[in-house]
Length: 274
Image 1 (cartoon, rainbow, N blue to C red):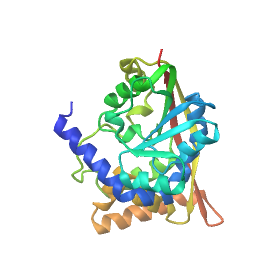
Image 2: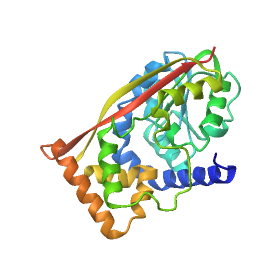
Image 3: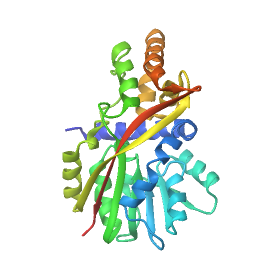
Image 4: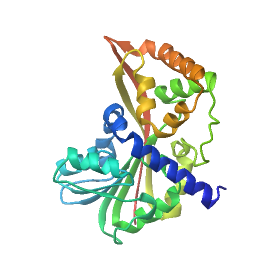
């Protein structure tokens, strides 16, 4: 079990990474993640008239989708730079700096909670789940997305395969929860049960990352995927060049008319407060 100090260090590395890479994420990866928003909101039961908490909101795309459904969103992110991007992109919507592991919202103040690709970046997901269960009204649903394992998700398979073949994962990052922990339905079952949420659903979503050939996949991860971006930045120059070349070669079969269409698989999980 990780110590409190180790978890704090992991939290701080994630926060620093998202502060530095907010613009890169918005440019290279936000469109990919946005493909999961409508299924996510369906799983959370978001409908007109609802007050919905958009956790780890990033540049705000899910909050806008909640508004378009007739709901009232509140977007929270722990990175002020992300909140600033969201406020600039979606004027009139409410965004605040806030930490999913330590929510300040009142008890039973939300009809639904959604978290699009945020849970895998939390040092203390169990703490976040306790807060989510607390702020949900009875009958309200929580839904989240995370990445499926590299066995299912080609983009991750290519990048992590190139890293493991030509570089090293041991670059001094603080220990944290496994990146693909919640791609396992049993882990999700335990997480939801501990928070008192019931009626769990577990599904997979097929998404696609469209980026320029030949190096768009490598550049997207370098610019906007915090943990992998840090690992890439800490490789020796010659190793990094080999990783780029390997990712380029493995991506080539997905190129058409100058664009790489890389299949990516996500996991969508939801549950209900009784």
